[in-house]
Length: 138
Image 1 (tube, one colour):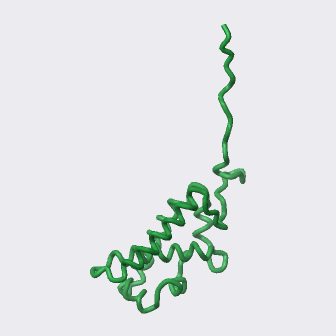
Image 2 (cartoon, one colour):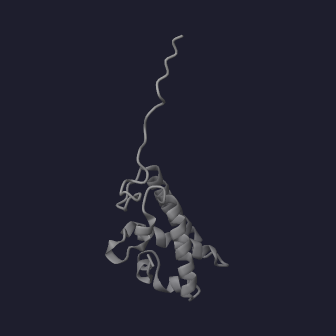
Image 3 (tube, helix red, strand yellow):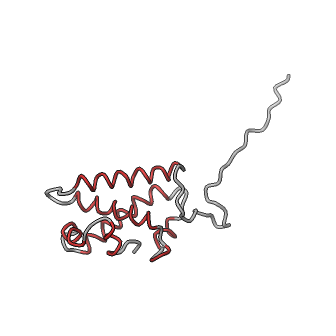
């Protein structure tokens, strides 16, 4: 999996993570899958999300790992009855979404693999041109 338990230490304490996941690692894995799919929706048009999210260890983009943790934690926190600590999670989630929107618009260019077609060309090159010139003289 793209995210592991150690990655959460940057954004949440171990005890808090246990409370949020309700001491069930299956809840954490489900939230991680949801987070990865949500992030993929922003990155898929330009980046190779299969390569990005199949990376492990040091080959992962550290900032994207943190974003994925924040999005997963937001989904976990919203499932709690008391909504404890939701304000902080909401702020971090909104920051993550803002970053992803910046990537999608091209204002932010992360170090991620670009999606390519079967010929190794960029899957989304810039196309330009015009219609064939018409002679409108009668």
